[in-house]
Amino acid sequence: MGLFSKTKKSPLQLTTPMKGQIIDITEVPDAVFSNKYVGDGVAVYPTEGKVYSPVNGEVLLVAETGHAIGIKTKEGFEILIHVGLDTVNMNGKGFENLISEGDQVIKGQLLMNFDLELVKAQAKSTVSPIVISNMEVVEQIEKNGLAGDKNVLMTVFEKL
Image (cartoon, rainbow, N blue to C red; front, side, top):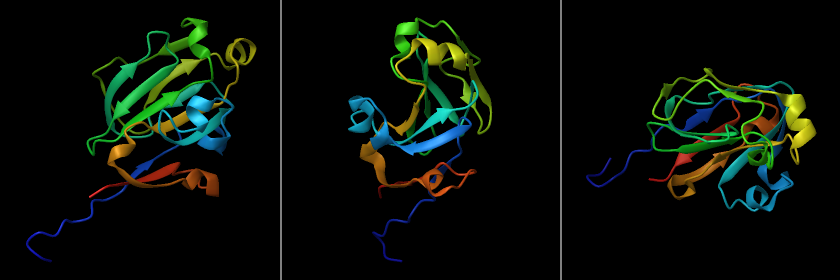
């Protein structure tokens, strides 16, 4: 190893934050997500109204309307979990956040309960994007969940 060599850091593995069918972000029926304007990742068609933390980290964002959560990991990755499409228009109805901005969370911790039937009735879609929003620090994302890995949703590699 040379004097100026950089060591490769361990990749971050995200677990699935909600039960359901996993699709690629490019399949989300909303251009903001499918064109990766917010970031890259996957999405889930949820089968229950619970959101769990996919990583250990700090809560950076709890949307005022309750439909989205942002978490920053110690590695510096920022993860956005956005429940449904156009759920901002529900004005918080049907969303119960169990965390606040600034909280430390651990992988697997329950973050939110939401009324899946109400989201089905009032939102554009129940599809819920999970994206890395600061792609400038990402070298590569392996979308393990698309390959059927139920334990690891995505593996994210940091740029050196």
